[in-house]
Length: 374
Ligand SMILES: Cc1cc2nc3c(=O)[nH]c(=O)nc-3n(C[C@H](O)[C@H](O)[C@H](O)COP(=O)(O)OP(=O)(O)OC[C@H]3O[C@@H](n4cnc5c(N)ncnc54)[C@H](O)[C@@H]3O)c2cc1C
Image 1: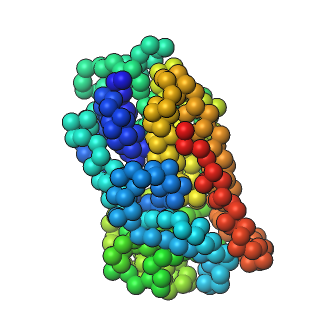
Image 2 (image 1 turned 90 degrees about the vertical axis):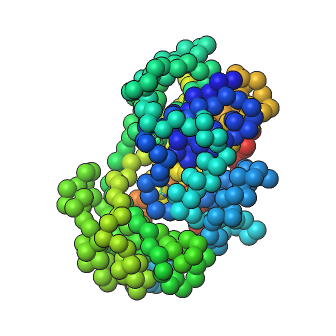
């Protein structure tokens, strides 16, 4: 089968690696001149590694990642609110985004990746699909995979009514070296009245951080924020937060307004399928966006291993639409809870959070491990 994949992100490259291994002719089209990931770090949970099973890619990811055993939430004065012990015998990892991309890309032959190829239009039918490019001749495929991210042009073509919802907060991200964290196996969040700060350990005394602040969509005041603004805003947060912001370079801070996609009813449209953020962009509150993109690719390629063409597409749709809708909804809910800033509401929320047993947090993520892989 000749497969055209639009987008060389985490989802598109995983699909390319696994389809190539099955002997299909794969071409990945990326609009950027190189495969370079914007962004600091990424979490990959055991739900993904489980689905990869004994595949070599799982080993590659494990070797490159920092193991995380616990996720802890504190208030801004560092009183503990909640602790989630990650499943015993499970492996949950954090990596630099570029490292993850490099590991996955090493399973895709160079000749299959076409950078500087911006897809501008797609023509779909029951028999074939044709991709058009900004600067190259069109090309026809048996199957097209739209893995072109949250602002997917492929989704716009097949599901023009799909709706991105702004979630009311913007996220800053960065990466620091040489940090002294109390425990490099614990990812921490601090929920407070000025915003939410997350600090996530990486290998070799590095860490990535994120800060979520409630904001209007495309807020001009916040897009002017740099390191000094963040330092001033969070100067009463715990030492660890201040240490990380001090270590951050002046440049290299990313900022994105947070959107999610209203869950779609279908990921399959004739000879085109949607995968990753193109299909189910979610807020980062469960750390599952990249993981679910990889799961899509694993499930899709598993289906092609066991079923014929039509049945594979049917099963992919069935297994992924409902599961990822659940991730979107739960992640959105966590974001709403975490982003309260009214001092009274924060006090009540924190009071309740302290009373809840730790097993409550664990139950919120249990469903992630239960989705089928073929
Ligand atoms: C602040 C933040 C923190 C996050 N933290 C985590 C986390 O800890 N764990 C986690 O699992 N996820 C996290 N995510 C989510 C994760 O980054 C995404 O879900 C993931 O990158 C989606 O992968 P993808 O391959 O679907 O899309 P993308 O990574 O967006 O890749 C899409 C690719 O398509 C290319 N492209 C777009 N349009 C075209 C076109 N027309 N023609 C050709 N190429 C095109 C783009 O250049 C890009 O390379 C986070 C996201 C944010 C914003």
